[in-house]
Image (cartoon, rainbow, N blue to C red; front, side, top):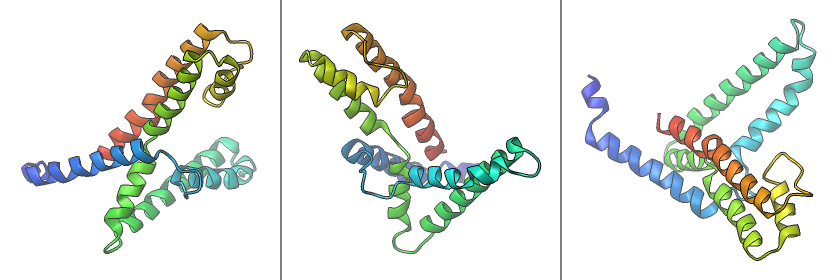
Length: 169
């Protein structure tokens, strides 16, 4: 029975789907004016924060219930959207692509690197401040290069490797 699960057509279809998600991410990144699933999930969690903090059994269980509820709702909506006739496959492709963040990560870090290469340190500091969670005001060129490398390393896993793994799974 498991032999059928790993049949060549299944692998080819999955490979094409995953390649399509990665290519779309690299081409388009995260357009700011499109509805983004991660932003919608974040808005849902923000809306539940007050309820979770005031939960009768304590904020820890309230937070856990909020996360569990949003996770279940997200899975249900994704399942429903991707099961729609005719457009389900396109919606699956969009959701898969929207879950990846490699394109924006590469573009943003490359922009900082270009500014550093052209000796535009103040502009590089400003752009870098949007990528890292530390004060960039007094960073020198080497510190900014190091920060770019660190954010690439950290966010490559969070924004691409982990989502891609679960997408393939």
